[in-house]
Length: 455
Image (cartoon, rainbow, N blue to C red; front, side):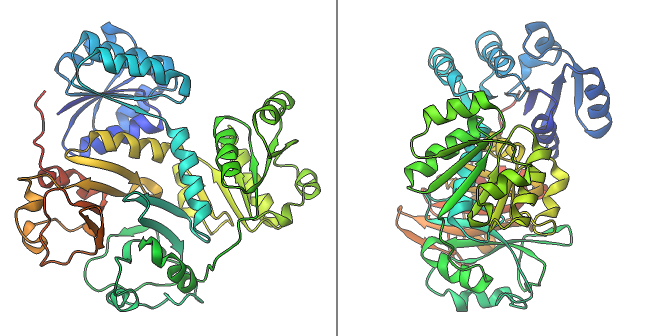
């Protein structure tokens, strides 16, 4: 498939690299000349300079032969125009557009209604709120993905020397949780990622992702050493779209919420919009402000300002002053390895969330969700098996899934949840959760049952 990507920022560049590794022919459009030079050196794709929201530049990029356009520029308006041109003028069959402002949803719906093809709107800020809400539900977690309508969680925990999992062989997981699909889905160790097959031992210092049937969550928390924490008070730093949406969500849950905002005007607006949240004007990096607001009584501090460096500093300061957990909105890929080592409990990356949402639309087959885990080296997919696909052709042991791809759960008939073994055969309509390394992800297309379009 030939793909045109508009916008060479973190999301666009990461997607270009992924799709190129999957075997797609990719052209990346970027208007900043300095970025064009660096992207040309870094990526094995064609990079052209120009405004991707203009028809001449899209023609030069080869849009007429594209099977997919992905618009991920910094400007919502640029992405919308690029999407409209692709679908209305050049008849591109599949269009994925990143739109942060919810106000664009109506215009996008009009475009989708008036023109043929598949059109997907990606909002990483909505996904950020969802991810933070999931993290708050799982004490001690560094990363959480909710799947199968919330029945299964894939949650990452840093294993300590005191944890009951330290030294446990993965083959023993079925002895601990014999009745439900609860197992190890992925391990990060010394900067390397492992999608486990066969015998593997959990070690202290590992970041281990467990696939957890929700009824078994308390058991996992006990063995990890996290335990159930009362979510009594959440303090949010930043009253932008993410901070406001998160405060609204937590208010509906009945939690005690404080919102800290440096801008007096934004703080006033937040106070007018929110109901029970205490809105405070002040800097999240000011230890005096945090101490005055009893940061040592806060169960979770969440920094989601527009300045990601401030988010990192504020979260570190909040932990030092007594907050039990601290999350930071940070899009620097290099920081993913530092979770736990620098004292922050979780880093939320809109870049990775946007990539996951885009891949959900791009991956072939009936893919319900895709989540890129920390560092973007591993993906978790929820898919529906398709009649006549290779995935349903034989028992799993004989299907030929390559190393690096693991089926961690299967839901049949919307009811039965199980860990399939090699002797089990997937049926059409089954929902599966798969974990795959980035390198192996491209080979999934041949198993999910929809042939690649030419173009």
